[in-house]
Each structure stands twice: as C-alpha cells, then as structure tokens.
Length: 383
Image 1 (cartoon, rainbow, N blue to C red):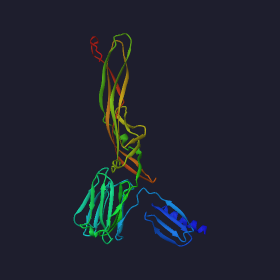
Image 2: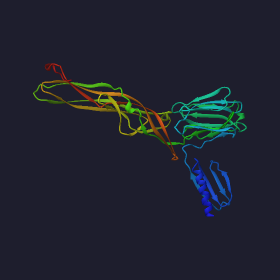
Image 3: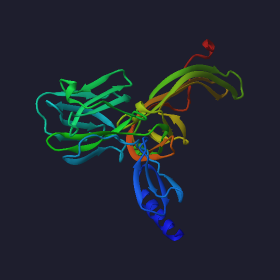
Image 4: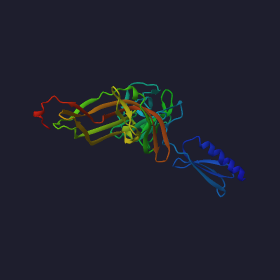
C-alpha cells in the first residue's frame, strides 16, 4: 500500500516539474476525483478522506497565471517575449457584430503577428516607454464561444476599450490580475475570429539587474576629446638655482552614464546595472577607451564632484615659464551586450540575453603643459 502511494506521488511530482503552476494533491487509497477550488487550485481527493496524506508542490513561475477568456474553437496561438525580454508595444483590434474579429500585436523587439481575419475599422493602442497595465478586464461573447471585449487602463492614465456596440451580447466581465503590469505577450485560440484570449504578465517584481555587460566595439572607437584650459600661470626664476613651484586649481565635473536596454525595460522597472564604465585612456598618439572598475549603478546615473588638480613646476635659473592645466571631456556612445535577471517576489527568475546602448560623459585626468616663456623678465607678473 505504501509503495503504491509513493509511486503515485513520484509520478505526479515528475509531471509537475514540467509545469509552472502551484498545485495541491491529496492522495489516498481509493479512486481519484478531480476538484477545483475557488482559488484555482486543483486537488485530487481519494475517498475515504479519513485515509489520505497531502503533498503540496509549489512550482514557481515568473509569469502570473494566464486568464484565458472565450471559447475552445480555432487553433492555439502563443506570442511572447520571454526569450529576449520583449514586451507588448502595440495592438490593433477589430470588433465584429457579436465578437472580437481579429488582432494584430507588436512586441518591442519588432516582431508582429495577426490573429483572426480583420474586417472593417480597427482600434489602436501604442504603449509609451515605461507604460504598463494597471487593470484589465475581458468579456466572453454572449454565447461563450468567442472573445467579446477587451478593456484595460495603464500607468499613464490612459484607457483602451474594444467592445461590441451593445453589451447585451456579452457575458459578465472577468477582471484579470495584472501582477507587475508588464505584459510579455498574449495567448489564446483563433480562426476566423478570436475564439479566446489571455494576456501574459510578469509576476510582481522584486528586483531587476543587468549583468555581464560587454562593449564589443570599445577598442575600435577613438573618442573625440574636447580639451579645455582651466588654469594658466607664469613663473619666473631670477636666481642662480632651480626653483620649484606648485600650481593648483579645481573644477566641477559631472560624469554621466546610462544603459538603455532594447525595448526600454529600464523605463518600466528599476533596473540595477553591474558593469564597468567606459573611461578615457591616454594612448601614445591619440586617446582611446578603457573600462573602469566594475561597480553597481542605476540604469541612469549622474555624479557631480569637485576635482582638485595640483602639479609641481620646476623653473631653471634665470628662466620664465608658462604653465597650463587642461582637462579633456568626451561623450561616449557604445552598443553593449548583457544579461537581464528579473527576480519576482515568489522567488522565480526570468533571465534573458539583451543588448542596448550605453551613453556617457567622461573626462581625462588633468594634464599640465610647461613652456619656456618669451616674456621679458623685468615685466614678470604672477596671476
């Protein structure tokens, strides 16, 4: 008896490991009956209930449960961006006399697909950068065989409503939990019409990180550096020995860095970046780029600081020298590759390769230039 129970439990667990939902299973000695709780939890009860034990398996998913509304006709479709982090960008929806006729959907990676057969005019919605769902409702058609209507609101206080001309052809509204509000795509069934439809949302997000950042063209780029003089002095030595002076100044600099992921994910979630920042390095004949020490940054960061520059200046006997301190500034624009790791509050993880653009403002180290002056020794002035 015990062996039979353990084998049954093992078989169910093995099957669940291929799934993504949280399910409860109650095992006993008699024939299995399938029941579904109001919370959507499936249970299998073996009667009599006085002789059973409970095994609960939580297979965590980075996607919230998909609520599919409509009928079972047509062929199945599934369009999502979980492989590369693409999200819903644009929708066209055609509504017929008693059903949603067709949809064309675009994701942020550029892919698009049409479902159903369009007829007449369509309603359009284009998501702005950082815009996500705050609520969603779906309606079945009156006979329950098709999708009847779609309504959602967004974080930018906008609303989309595609529905029949009269609500008498609709079954009751079905509100959908949008979790994080970030829609990775849609799934459902379609033929001539949209038979049923569900939206795929990432679960509530705990953190999002960009790691393993590489700049493939870093060593091919020659930065255009604008050199600015920030201090100049003239020093005179009318003695018979070399004299040493010190020139000092300070300058406020603002270093900027931003990593923009393809699909503008950083506008939707707080994206933490672990990377090295491209900096200016002195080459033998020209400037080049190098990577700074890896650290953790916000996806867009700006650091303002006061830089102190101090250099010793040696002036030979009987000489006058002009001394100049200069600093170079460059704007950096580079493609990057990396990996995005999104962790949800249920501890599930969505990870995908990504690419994007790094933009930054960086500075050279201060440089001092000393030239022998042609100024008359008797007219020497120190500024």
